[in-house]
Image (cartoon, rainbow, N blue to C red; front, side):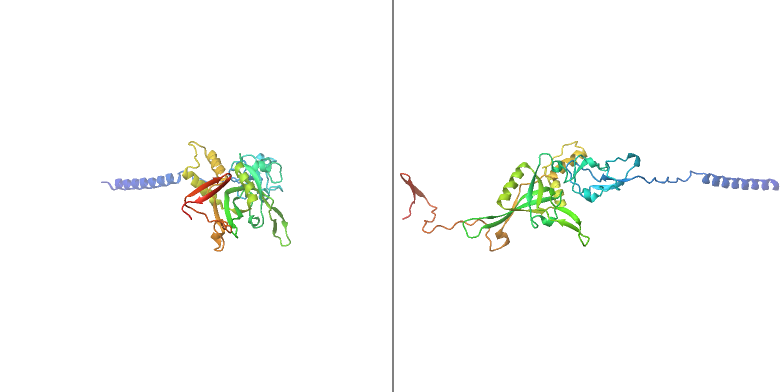
Length: 326
């Protein structure tokens, strides 16, 4: 083969190889452009109070019910609780009652809340079919001021039952459970000389009960002294779970989540007056009786006879004669 032809063939192959390499690099660099995330627009506008969870009618606000969020300036309304307003302090709204239902994330308006000092406060706080009763408490029976609106308590009745013996029976009985506190006459005052918040002790507590339980509380206050026992939030949740598991609370098929939540919330706020428990003085001290003592037999009286007897009537006088006793 001619040397020139071989040289041309080799040169053509080299040019083809170089061209292929350049074409590959060119197409690899011409791929899709790298996506660049668009900067997230930071919301601007005033901060207002919104509901951090669903608030049905009659809900007593607690610190977990509210939160501040940024709201568009063009959607701002005068009725919203703006963060810059003096009456928008969440601590000042704790204890107020929701007059109209508020869904989670919805702004709170001044017309949707009613405070303890406003007219119609108790009517707004009461659930349908419920009643409000007031119970007098002391520093010890009222949990030393650590009971607030929205808490749930048990009511304990303490009394002395006089029998025929020298010592009356001391007994304490839990007559009601899971009673919701509507209001107290406790007041927060300004800070003292040390900068600490002063709390005035409550002497009355208003409770939410059924009409029948209201009658029971009225009688119980005349029978003995009443005291409050604060319930844990987990107790109420476990009671609801047990009620659903046992079938006491039946949720119809097809119920919406909102309706189901309202049903469970209504059950959680219902007071319970069954399955009461009690403790007597004998359970606490060996020197106290466990039951009501019987009266001792009168001097000169005939002891009771459990055998057969004959009743003899002479006019209006009736006498009992034991059979077989001489």
